[in-house]
Figure 1: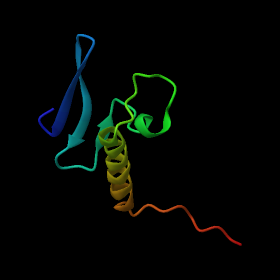
Figure 2 (figure 1 turned 180 degrees about the vertical axis):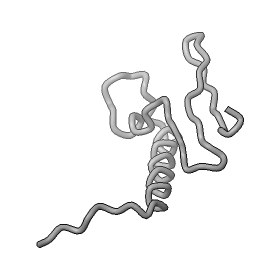
Figure 3 (figure 1 turned 135 degrees about the horizontal axis):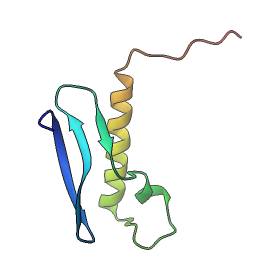
Length: 79
């Protein structure tokens, strides 16, 4: 794991790696749902604070910025 930056999370006495990002490769992995804070309103345990929503937006912005670096494009459709 020395090639990755890791974020450690603890929850209910369990400690686990919640996020990893490669130092030298375009690889990022989440072991959580960054969209929940903005879009899931069922359980009361999901925070909807301004900071929680900002984390959601920052994760989405990062994901999109990484995807835009790719030269892969879908084929143009004939009209």
